[in-house]
Amino acid sequence: MRDFILLFAVGLIVVVGIGWFLLPERGRELFTGSDIEVQPAGPEKPAEEAAAPVRPRRVRPQPVVEQDVSAVRASGNVAADQVVPILDQTTLNFPAPGEVTTGEERDDIIDEYGVPQLSAFTQDRGHLFETYVYRRERSEAVINLQDGRVSGVFLRDSAQLRHP
Image 1 (tube, rainbow, N blue to C red):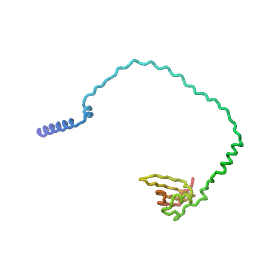
Image 2: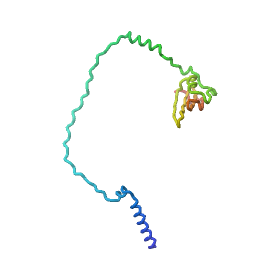
Image 3: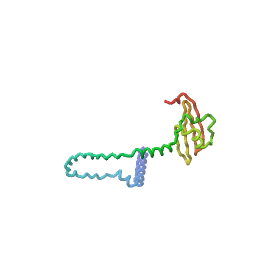
């Protein structure tokens, strides 16, 4: 029994010695005493006087410049000719089962069904993935696109889809 304990102790000392030899210098500093230097407290500084409160700057009112109303009306008539009518979403077609086919172009979808109520996109490994959601009353159409072409269509009709 004594031989085992003696052999174990010698082996432990050898392992610790090899570990200590291989330990980097930063690790050796952990086991050595550290010199702590305490700096003496310096003379106390007098309390600084409270700074005077900063007054907000006063804004001087600018003179009102009156414009000629006829010039504004004339420029308004030109802009009225360039107004693009907004399409009512209820007048656009809604995708029916089988209408949207795999491989159809994004522009064709938007031309036929209008701008989707919800759209999301992401990019992964050089491919652009888009999702368009069209809703009308209780129906919902989800069109998945990959690189600008339809890759999948999901249609459903449910009472849970009613608009709030």
